[in-house]
Image (tube, rainbow, N blue to C red):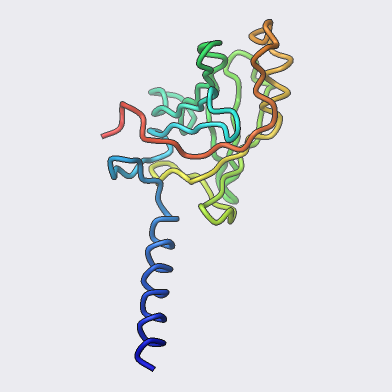
Length: 162
């Protein structure tokens, strides 16, 4: 009976730790990151990064999002906006406002999450049509290093976070 009680207690502690960790993105130094100060890496294609930065002053947006590649450099910059109410988030290209890409985020258990200003960064993200946008953009002249359709995983806090 004592072994069963110990096993249940350990299981409950591990579950509680996983649940608390899943609600927050913590980098290797133990810092909690907001979405505005986080870096995501493409799963299966680690040369691609999404770098989130604080919003620009006097702009109606939640964050600036930069897509980068180790060899291609800065590929594109977007503004991230979260709608009121349901809280859907999307990326817009400030140069081509007709370009709108939905961003869907998930916790570490792949349960749908949400983005709100100053919340902790979600563990995973998927951006619909980002690979297609990269392929057809003017920046994809060299098609040797294409993004494709990838899931993004929280990697670390950006250097600008405190």
